[in-house]
Structure formats: C-alpha cells, structure tokens
Length: 434
Ligand code: ATP
Ligand code: AMO
Image (cartoon, rainbow, N blue to C red):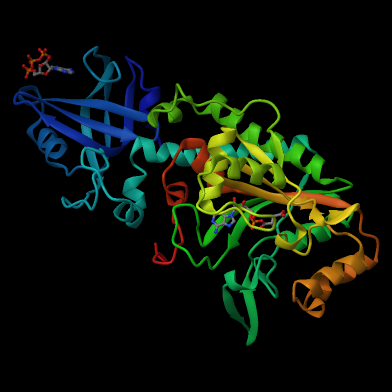
C-alpha cells in the first residue's frame, strides 16, 4: 500500500497512514479510542466526538472488531496511550469489514481450545503469543541453515514421492502414481546417502516427511519437518558433534534475535541455550540408569527399545540434552553400520531432550556386500532398492548423518504441550484441512 506507515515507526509530528486490524474499541462517552494492530504493534486512534466530523466518528466507532481499516492522521505524543503516541484521524477507510461473530477471540480475552484454534489459524495467529511461535520457528530454520553453512554443507532437495519406504513398512502412506504404487517419503535417508557419494560430499535438507503413525499423541505428526544431515568421511562421533552445533545454534539464534517473541511467550527469564557437550551414554548405561530408579514395572533388558515412560525416567535422571549411543544392531535400521569389533552393537545414536527423542543418526553401512546382507536380514527385498544399492558399487565413501525433528525441536525449546502448536496447519489422524 502506497504511503503506508507501520505503527512502530509512527513518530510525533508525522502525518501517517496506518493500516491493520481493529483490535479494540473503547468508547468512554465524549471520547473514544480505537486500537489498531499491525505486524509491528498497536497504536491508539483518538476520536473526540464533539470536535470531529460525525461521519468520521460513525465510521471509526461502528466498525466491527478485527476488520481491516486504514487511518490517516497526525501523530501526537500522549503518555496515557499504550505506546506513548496516538493518531488523531482525518480519514478512516474500512477496507475489509469483519463478521461480528468471530470463531475465536484474537485479543485472547476468551480462551479457545486447540482444535478451534487450528481450524481458524489466521485469527489464531493474530495473537502475539501464537505469532511468536512461528517467528521463532523461522529464526530456528534461519539459524540452522547458518550452522550448516559453518559446517560447509550444501542444501539439497530430494523427492517426496518415492518408490520405497525406509523407516519401517507400516508407517507408509501409499499413493497412486500413474497406475503404479508409490509412497509419500518417510525420510530423505537414501537420497542424502546417495549424495555423499557424489561430488557434494556433505549435505543437508530441511523438508517434509510423511508417516502414517498409528498413534494420536502430543508429539507425533503425520506430516513433519525433518532437518537432515549427511557427510562423507564422517564417523558417528563426528556426526554427533555436528548435531550439537546445529541444535545449539538454533537456541543461540532465538536467544539473540527473538527477545520480544520470548517475552510474548513469558519465557524471557528461563530461556537458555544448552551448554557445552551433551553427555553421551551408551545404550547399556542408559538401561542401567533407568533400571536403577526402579520406576518401571518391568526392568529393561538388552534389545528392548525405550518406551515413552523409559525416556521420561531417563530424561529426569540426566536433566539436559544427551545422546544414547551403541544401540543393539537388531533394533536399528539396515543402513546403520555395526561396530567393526562387535556386530551386535551398532554405531546408531539418538539425541534426546529430557522429555523426548529429537534426533536419530549413525554411521552408515557403505560396504556393498554388507548392505545387501542387511536388507535380507530385515526381510527387505534388495531388488526394490537397487537404485540405491548399485551406487555402493561405484565408490561410496564411509559416511554418517542424522535426522532432527524440526517441530520437536521447537516444541521442546518453548515447552509447548502439543507438537501441533509448532505447525501452522498440522496433519494428524483427524485433520486433513485446513
Ligand atoms: P482529557 O484528559 O484528554 O481532557 P477528557 O477528560 O476530555 O480527557 P474523558 O472522557 O473524561 O475525557 O476521559 C475518560 C478517560 O480517558 C479518563 O480516564 C482519561 O484519563 C482517559 N483519557 C483521556 N484521553 C486519553 C488519551 N489520549 N489516552 C489515554 N487515555 C485517555
Ligand atoms: P527417525 O525415524 O528417528 O530417523 O526420525 C528422526 C526424527 O524425526 C522426528 N520425527 C517425527 N516428528 C514428529 N512426528 C513424527 N511422526 C516423527 N517421526 C520422526 C523425531 C525423530 O527423532 N532416517 C533417520 C534419520 C537418520 O538416521 O539420519 C530417521 O528418519 O524427532
């Protein structure tokens, strides 16, 4: 809009045209105030009824809350106004009138349930504390990209319509692709591995992953954002170092650039980037720690995956971000390499927040024969993966990498109770639109 002034830039003495939403109207009799909200803040518009044109007063004070209007007038200092300045309007233009019945109250005076909020995201994101989550999400992605740049990575984009799954057959969404069976991609796993054998060597991708998760939980989505890393000539310990750097950078970016947003969320005092190296526990040490608490009904034994409850018990014990390394090979996927001196133990690792898993990764099996054997052991048909395995015959370097759940990172960073709060338009079992 030509000549538009943002409310935050309005200074005494200026004649401005501010445009935005009608946040609130307070009619006190002889004087009334309209609070106009735009992306930069709020500004008070003053109507002195006896001194102003009747039409102007009528237009300004009869407009419905949340309508889009523009106001042209002079800015004056006014210590009693919320921002210390106010506009005395010369003209008010109602650009888009809102229905008087709003499905939720953007001023936040009336609480709305999450489903109502998700059905009306546009209105929901007019609230400072909700908008703040997505400003922070954008900052996290910016900082993460910068951290990958520090690591000399190249950003890649790989297909989301694919011929095979990689993370377990039951979680696939099948689709029809010109009469052929195809799937929505569960992970860029195989593609990012193919790229470490190319001239690129070290890559990252930030993109959607699709999982037909059985369970409706506060930390699973059916469409999530995966932050993936893969590097040639890295082992699993170097991949863990890179993981720490990326996660810490995300926190540091938010601490540096999102003070207003943290304040809107009431987190300005407690927000802190995780410090130093994350503790690295072996799977066996993790089991011992969990079992020693006696909090589980049945003690865990070698080969068990960690239940949600076990993750919580361990998270409480450790109390900070940490890695679990040296998982049993049998519960890690075919592409994870076993230790050379003990093939029962894998190089796979998970990185945990005290409340949940954030990352899985490991060193990869780059030896063609071992890879094909691994497929057979997991009951997968190596022929179906020929597009992937054949490249291991033409010079595939040792490599390692990981995948970080973007929404889980934001959820744990901000203490959100439900992962859906970290997605604009979440996909879950009940939710396919908006
Ligand atoms: P003024 O103080 O501008 O002469 P008034 O006495 O003509 O105002 P009232 O209708 O009595 O107007 O004011 C109602 C209330 O609004 C009072 O509590 C006053 O302090 C407050 N008020 C008046 N003007 C402003 C303003 N520009 N910004 C914020 N509050 C105001
Ligand atoms: P994994 O399956 O553990 O590993 O996924 C990696 C991370 O992605 C996040 N995540 C999810 N977040 C929300 N909803 C979901 N349904 C969901 N599924 C996964 C989690 C998880 O830790 N290919 C490997 C990674 C690798 O080895 O590089 C993989 O996909 O935060």
